[in-house]
Length: 200
Image (cartoon, rainbow, N blue to C red):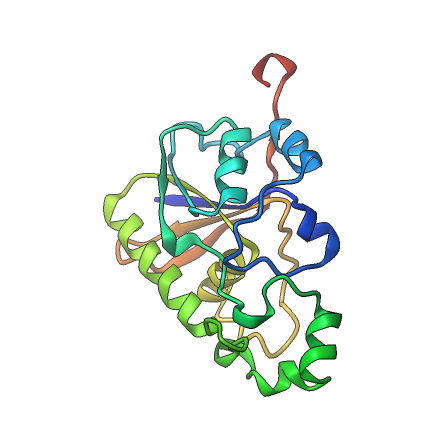
């Protein structure tokens, strides 16, 4: 079976460079308008739809015309704890220039008061296992952290070196899932299709 992972559309906090994490930010008006012009990649019109419970993801699913959405908390963004709502500059100004180094590297990275990257990967892996057991092609509307976790679980990138291939967060990451949930890349950066005026 295959699963297409999509990131939510643009928010005002995205434009400001603020970490959203568990904060329930909505899409911006421009974000809504943009997502209404798009639909999932080719081959997923009959797929089961899963979605993060966060408002920005639910609004994205609605704008894409996706119905019968199954909310799954495992698709929520990584919890960034005390750093949520801050820009990187504000984080470093508050907690020191070495704040990121002190918070760990790779899967050991944990924002102050937040969730480790390893914990995020564990819940994404568990989600893949459950979806694979159902055997139906799926769409998952989620967040940047979840797409990166899926990419890591697929490629075994250690997150210490630069990402081995460009992961376009404006496109879909299409994975094939083995019966046990083990992912492999079926299509990197699958383009979202344009909706006709009649479909909007």
